[in-house]
Length: 73
Image (cartoon, rainbow, N blue to C red):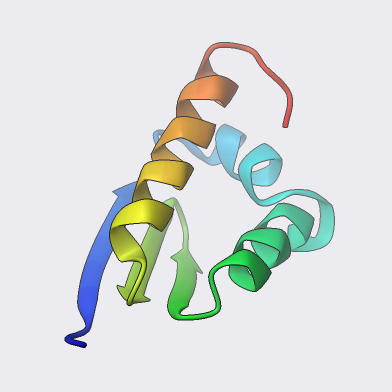
């Protein structure tokens, strides 16, 4: 299987804490659910590489949309 890469740009630092969760709790859940995808967070960029990047990128994009709409994760 060829490795793929993707990046999700989160529109603002104010969303990052809620997106990643307290002590990166949400991030850990996503990492555990998609062990073939490496997730790296730098500032407001979420970089993805591995086998499930498309799915994980869609997940992060949807979580950002929920947060922007005022929903809690």
